[in-house]
Amino acid sequence: RGVICYNISYMHENPILPNLLVTKIHEETDLTIADVIYWKKSNSMPFQSSPNKLSRIVEPIYIFVHKDNLSNFSANKEISKKNERTGQLFYKKYDNFIEAKNNDKFKSNLKAVYSTELIKKLIHIYYPKNSLIYDPFLGSGTTALGCIEEGLNYIGSEMKEEFYKVALERIKLKNDEIK
Image (cartoon, rainbow, N blue to C red; front, top):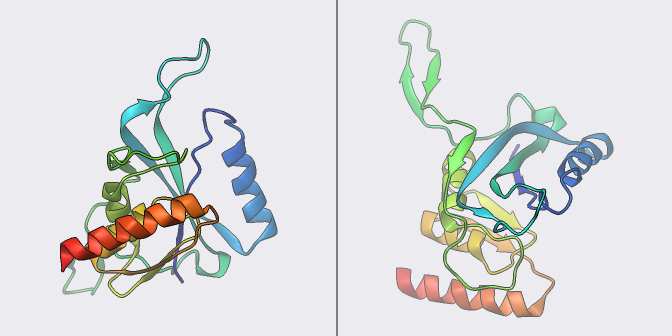
């Protein structure tokens, strides 16, 4: 009953790719889109080096759920009030537009980067305490760092040894900082 938050950052090179991928996921798996969040970065990328394409300051984050759980997937939305007469719950307002820094000012050769600020905002919406978050593209460990800061469990995997070692070092530093 959990969610998959999936950011596809190839909009500049191949703008059709996210739409094709989302369609394929919906048609060929038991997953579907529950929502789309638009992440507004603090700086647009890439820099103005194209004569005909715009720089992107917004990227989509697709929220996938199992098709059977489209109306009852788990989230972490905070209750703002309860109607005592009917028992109906009302929730704090959450928009599908999130502003967060591009990255943590960490130098990396990774192409797809994001900030712990973004991760923590997604955690506050979708991942209750004691959640386990899996990042299949660990990269430099940003998702793990956000989980550590928010007290959540995480698992990550990374194919490139160079990035894996960087992630381990960043995670170690964060854990030492918290102790």
